[in-house]
Length: 541
Image (cartoon, rainbow, N blue to C red; front, side):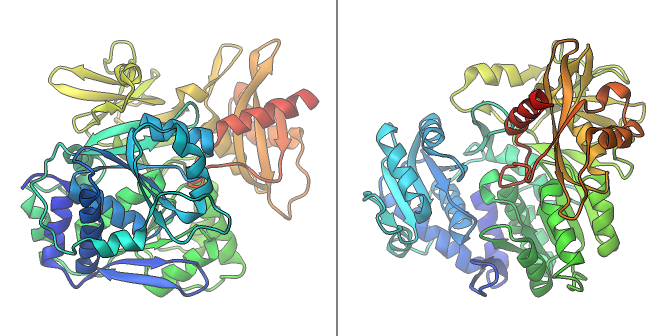
């Protein structure tokens, strides 16, 4: 047995077949739900895997998942792993041109998609080269284009519920497409063994990773049920899928919703006795605070042990607000990326005054991007990680050469985040180099200014971008969303607030108040949008 994700999942199924693995709330508030034990989820995945093989798909070919959250998403990922196909996440917000790019760049041979996206799929399909097998979840809307598709229910019923698959390998691939905040999406190619250790903590996030594949099931058999993981962001963004697999490696239960509705998230925590919630930053945590202060006041969250964020920071201000309402919950700002898996977690004193400080794992360093040598204490470098790292970007040798390097006997990945390290090994993350604002020779990282802005009691959300300036080259501009009951907030008030937390050159020189901050479905910042809005607003000021 190797560190193959399908093999590992099946080993867990065999020791806890009757334990509940997955509960899915289809339409929050309606009561519609599905529950599957480990044996039922395994059989459901086997059926789809056999259908894919019977349809002529070969090991190593790529299958896209163009889906909302649902049983079908995780079922299909497992089916791909079982059949040695490569699962590829597809951002369901993409429109025709973006889909054409991703379908072609990823060399998709098959696609599983929600019926809601039929029109977009039909528009992109004629310009794809290899996509030949379509499976649709649900009935198409009235007037949707006709496509040569297999209904997901038919694919599932046609396949055998038994396993009967050939041997698999630790080298089987898992591809995660990451859009980042700029540029076209890139497919990060993970060997499954590397993903198991870097992204799934080797089967044990809170302790020592397993030393051999068989140990995973032995640990599950020795333990009991009782933990429910609730990944609330879209599964198509990778983090939620990995969180689900962390739960499966524990032999525990996963709860998922089709879409993020804050009030229904709280109701599910209460009803299902959820232990651990994962989300993305203030954009997802703040609505929970608002609901707990308003219509969901008094919701029983006593089962909840932790709330963790990755992909965006839970600010000190919003964390404190949530902690006041739910005092016994551990709030964790985790740090990682599609290219590195986990790098570490934020220290308790992270915030607008000291910055975003990390306790990193032993595989993470701050290095000079030119020499790849560790930087001296206090100097700015880029985060890098060694050991279990991806093979590179699919179909992009140039970006692979820029990002991945060999040093000694180890493979490294150079991340886009600028950082410093102190005498105690604590890393302060400054922000993405691509978003850095150069104003009069000084460098300003948006995330630091955003934390300061969001600590203002009237600010609900904020993004920061650089806008052109004749004297300084660029100046710092803030795009701010106020709380519904907040009075108007002018530039002077913003500057007065920030001056107590930031050096003078970091203080916004322009502010645009907007009704809504645009973010991705997972809560990640949309800096292209912020720069456009900030530039327009700055010209008018």
